[in-house]
Length: 179
Image (cartoon, rainbow, N blue to C red; front, side):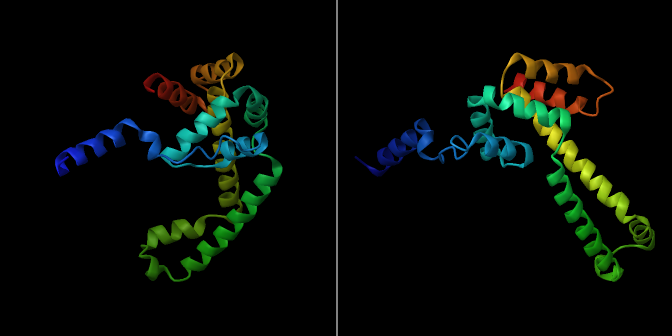
């Protein structure tokens, strides 16, 4: 067998057996609560996200109630408390950086705008953004976990022009049509 045939054989094998090149799904055997929390709070890379979606789909029925609660109630108070503390700390670090505006390359207008921000407003926006992301993931989870009730919630939210989650729900539905 010459080198060309060896390379062709290797390429064919590699392309026809993709599982040899993939990592095992590390989300499949997570305890249910850990899987749900991972889904609700994690931003995954593309490979990890598809593995997480597979794990959620496999354990969907058991996850439905968790995702429904997260959708309705939002992030737990403990997670919001941690987010508040982290945002307050980040605000103070940013304030310290603003003491030397030349090193940041900020103009007078930008500097004035950043200095005008209140800590309370910054923290509130950070908490609101975290809760929005948490609920958005819960909405996605309701769809991926399967079940008619979850899909109905996503579809109804996609049709509700007043919902702040309208665009998220539409993206979930569009992703499924494309996928």
